[in-house]
Length: 196
Image 1: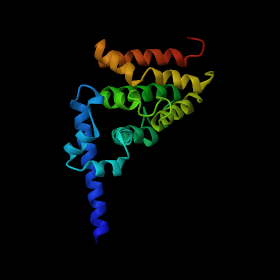
Image 2: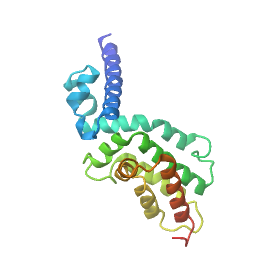
Image 3: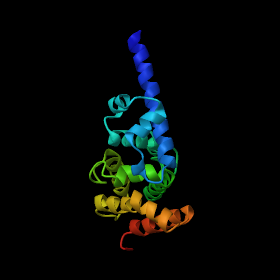
Image 4: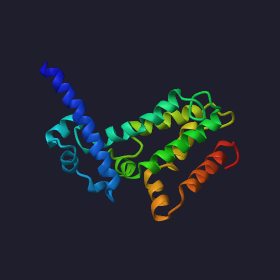
């Protein structure tokens, strides 16, 4: 019986930590302002519990990012158009990029902390980037006449980098719908062979 209670406590603690971290990232000006001690205190757990569950700040950031991204990932893998696999490739690329941009706009501070805070040393090595790149490349390979799908996937994903999204949405105050339209226009030109 103690083992079952321990597992329930671990699940409850994990959910409390993710909820607390989510709230802290949403209200702090800079992602660097959120410390492990802040998260532990807000979740009502000890720092040891936090480190056992997530390893370090990078592990906590990844877990929170993945939890928020799960609905998008499900829509991409099995959902209906425009994100789902039944969508024609050019339309699906546009929908994937739009979903990623919207996700980063909705999760600006978290995306900045994960991509720009030195968590992994490079924005191109984390598992979430590799997953998006692989998915985008696979869809790009279905577009007739489009060459070098690996590079094109990198270039399109660069247009959704968290630091660029933050600069456009924050410093330049570009409205959300305008950013979405600009990304769609850019991607559409890239997807037409010989247009760029």
